[in-house]
Amino acid sequence: FFAAGSIYTATKKTEVSQLDGIGRCMPWTMAAFAIGSLSMIGIPPTVGFLSKWFILQGALDIQSWFAVTVIVISTLLNAAYFLPIVYVAFFRNSNTKNVCTYNEAPFPIVLAVSITALMTVMLFFFPEVPLQLVKLLIGEGL
Image 1 (cartoon, rainbow, N blue to C red):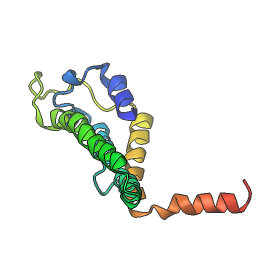
Image 2 (image 1 turned 135 degrees about the horizontal axis):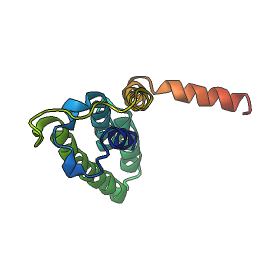
Image 3 (image 1 turned 180 degrees about the horizontal axis):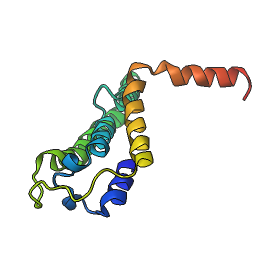
């Protein structure tokens, strides 16, 4: 949603069909969107992979085949939805002959999108950090 807001702020585009080649004009926003997409699909190294992995392990442990099926279908549907958008943004030529008539959204928006994408990857490698923070807060009775 951050990326959609960034795209709208910079371009006023509201349709996926209008995003041909936008990755060349808004590389930071679309790179963050791609990372978020990979996380939603559940591909490492994103925190989305970890969450799907732990849910899948739990479902397998209790032999909940329905939950396993839902997770697999969710992964496939997310891939079917997000990957074409990433492809269109980075690999399909726009009708404007690759001339960018817009740039990235204002810096604070791009910064928020970029930090969110960075945290999506960092939490894959350091998932214990927020858990330690929660333990600290619970231990102090907050």
